[in-house]
Image: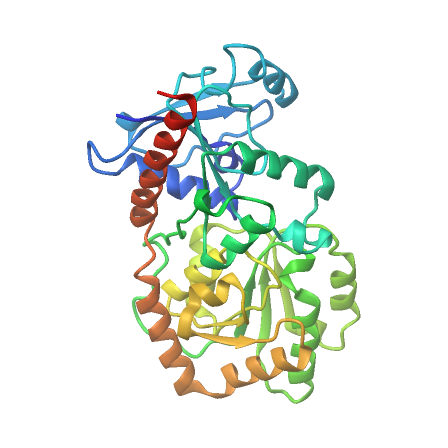
Length: 374
């Protein structure tokens, strides 16, 4: 059985974005049929917190390697001979870097997941020091034997960063069966929904201006935003406070999955014309609930939604307003789009993602062995 070092740290601290990906994929990998899946040596050192162990992991197919050293100390230890992350805290055949912050690995095959390269498209799209992040990611891409990207559009991100095309493999996200339509048809909802961190690439300011156009004509319902505070959010919050329609906007910070499911199920539509995404997991979760989306043209969420999404120009306020207006006014179309969304979502499962990831591991092992002459 292949032994994989799997960086579980993003899932220990939060369940959004990358954390959700790591949690769901790790769990699905441990549930692959015997002989078809790996044993996961979970890389889980954390000095501060990190107690949210993902539920559902197969106890016979993983080991949680905890540690309580500060990150900088651990980083230096991994650089010592014989103590890199392929040997310490556990000896592995392959290591999977699941985030932009990754441990030093020398003595085994390496797989990296590149979630997106929004920080290259526009430095404002990420809260980190862009130059530091760019150097780090490029180094990992060069060192990795195989690179997982999560959608066809994100393949371009990898190539933009200099990754060799033969290394890059698309493995889409799945969606948990937890996200599903309501058991009985709900009454027509009174809100539009957006889910995502308050940050520039989510395009909140243009959504607000588009909705103000519609609210002036009383042509759209209220807007609920679910998301934690990110970076460069001050102007958007100030715009809400000064908006003549501020009472029609509700910000919801941290919520449980149970609450999130209810919001998805009850929404008239998800409004998500993000400027840049690697995948757009919230679009897929809404689709699984039978909720259609307003999404940006030529983006990863548009690839995910397929024909179930209503596409707009994410840089054009009038286009966003027109798209939302159509979604609100055309009830029959909206219902049909929701049904198509639900059907398309059935093709995205974490089981499929895990099986495809295992194929990437095997490909990376072969490439590594050819490199070292085994």
